[in-house]
Amino acid sequence: MQRIRLRYTKRGRLRFTSHRDFQRAFERALRRADVPMAYSAGFTPHPKVSYANAAPTGTGSEAEYLEIALTEARDPEKLRVLLDESLPDGLDIVDAVEAHTSGLADRLTASVWELRLDGVDPADARRAVDAFNAAGSVEVQRLTKNGMRTFDARPAVVSLETTETQSSPADRPSDQPCAILRLVVRHVTPAVRPDDVLSGLRAVADLAPPVPAAVTRLAQGLFDEETGTVTDPLAPDREAAAALTTAAPAAAATAPTPEGPA
Image 1 (cartoon, rainbow, N blue to C red):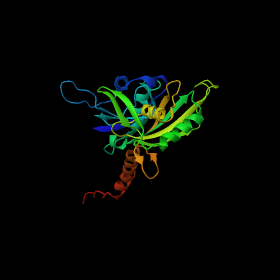
Image 2 (image 1 turned 60 degrees about the vertical axis):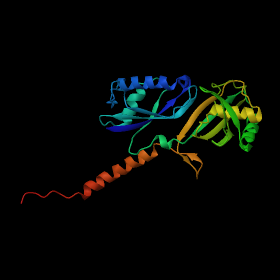
Image 3 (image 1 turned 135 degrees about the vertical axis):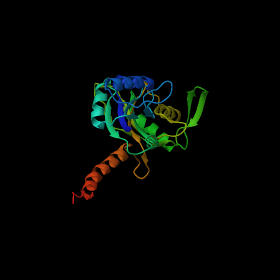
């Protein structure tokens, strides 16, 4: 059995697809691309697909991950192209590697988010960010299936800062202010989402965007304490594959030569 790990995106209008919507679209793509999927046992077999930490509905993402199990070996890049062609524009398969390590989900410990606040003056956003960063705790509320829950959103936030606006005039009216925030948040329990941070900004600085924020996950992976960055979770698999490729010719060169007939 071969395992392939994929990185995919949710862009444009497809950011409003739910995780279940994506699951249905992806399983259709597997059938269209004639992927030799491994199936679970039991009365209702289903393709072996493992999803990891999907982004909330309504948020875009450049860094969603999943793993599939195959019954026959396939070239990861060729498989990526076939699946990408079988999905609608906006749900794009952008990376594929063969799994040579375990624990992909364990390497998704933090996310980098971009929050675009249309109608918010960048100076007001900077003051709100400074107030949030200076706060020892930022209590926010979220409605759950068990009712309203209050929790501290501050400890999960590694960094929160304003950045220069990258939006093109086509994205928003050119005469409207726009603030861009960059957020790095750890994956903790309870999960702290970008909308929780926006609630925190409202609580500490009364920052309330006039329209819903456009939120995009830029990266997801293992948080490096030394550099303060989020690393590529597929890098260990690439390194292992490169090591195997390098080791194969060396092993062939040192193998003993079979002796001929006496």
